[in-house]
Image (cartoon, rainbow, N blue to C red; front, side, top):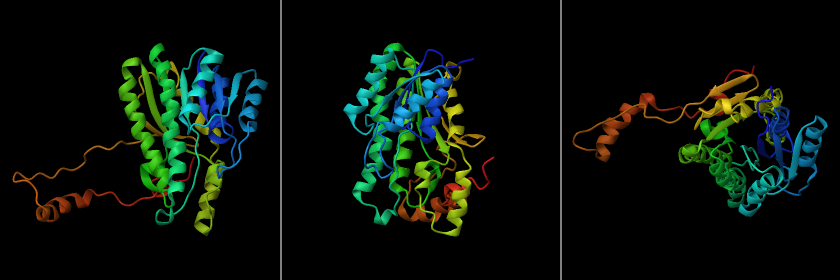
Length: 303
């Protein structure tokens, strides 16, 4: 059964890797797909219609329906064109997968403004631009679903990715706000933290024996494994799933926690700096979270 039959889905960053896998599977499930990809190098240079068109050609070879788009998610007007192309070609939009991304990994104390801004502009601003461009169409038809790609780099932590982590945590907050604001129009918004070996992951330096071993593990995680759960969230059968954060790693799917109070300190007289140090912080100390990395929280190999 084609679970997305008749639906129109926009997938950004769909020229390769995770995005391509999602676009291909969306078409297999009956969706008509707008395949968005700038076709740039990993450092953001260049630009080509090739990757997006190649995905479209492969979809059509399998009997699916798709169209290529090379507009930048990082630009407001360009993002509007992505949505408009879907409306012009297919007359509606039913799902958006915000997957486009880039990396500029560097230690925080060495990171430049451009390195920070370029990542936030693509990931966070790009997710906002595309989501906002589609929102009026979702509102008018009183239906729709967003899936945004976040990362354990933000949810848990990684070294040398302050820009990426900030953008990915921003996406979590954005997704929750979309879910709350658009719920009355039967629109839902969820996040996935994907684990997969992609061109972006392959660009991360592996300059220690430990990093080389981690990269070998990364290389076993297929990008196509992210597609099934992503597309499940776009189906009508998942209409009650909203405002959630998930993780997908090989054959594992996780429901991730969200911040909630876990310990309370109360003082009838109010707090002073001294009493905070003497009472509050010691009360909290046993419950403080360790400064974990993503690999500490996911200490077992993917299965």
